[in-house]
Image 1: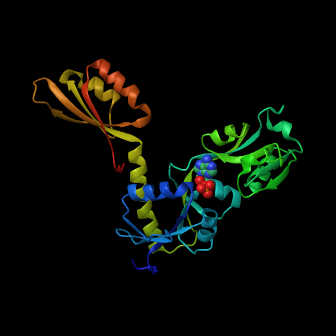
Image 2: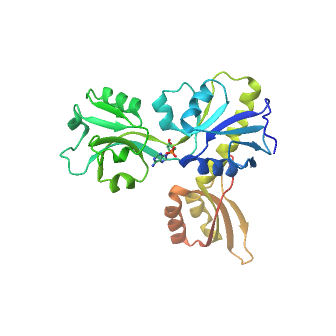
Image 3: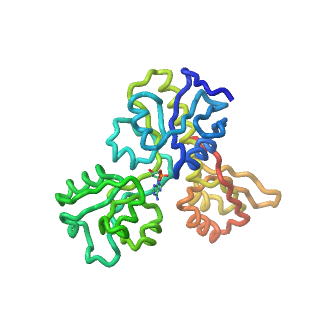
Length: 291
Ligand code: AMP
């Protein structure tokens, strides 16, 4: 594989090694990009789009985008908050969910942040935490560590931490109790601000593809058998994107209704149409959806 970059190609920075790496690659592939990666994951080329990918530390990504080393990046919103980066947030990507929380040793008599006046707080996100406590007018003493924040209480460093969590299980294992969420975060596509029309066009087409995959995740494609006289009633419930497609079945008086149902109301709608008389319901994932 050739290692040189094509200067006409869009450059995307993604995390080299960490929680976001596999999900980012999966996301790009699900959005239809075919990637050729070198064995060490230093860079990748895209076979079906003018896009080169560089693998870097995730906290370098906003800086690389800001100083135009790359055009776009995929990074957790948490890093943007911490760095106060001057980049454009283009699209939330629906993975990498986490939140920055304040947690205290389980048995401490602390119930809310008001009880943290002048407390020592260990965190890898000092600026985000300082900004939060400034906004609450609560003075605190922030101690920055680069990792393993959750071990600070056990090491006798501080009994309060501010750390990223998704399930909360690591904090619970360390006997820490969450008392506040500072912010919620997910992976986001970011772009540099000063960009020429050609590159902007490439970014816009890429976003169009990303959105088609993200929209598709929200829906299921559903095929329903129903008595013909129930069509109007069923259509009111599962109207689809514009209207359902209706075709006759080989049995007289029966039809097949094909439609898209949003994932978050899927079971509710299926129960309703089943009560009306729908049967033989088949649900399939949608790969891409352009609305
Ligand atoms: P890491 O692999 O620790 O460098 O984490 C990379 C990124 O994953 C973070 O900056 C967050 O955006 C995201 N992330 C998602 N869930 C978590 C979590 N439970 N703890 C830390 N980071 C998380």
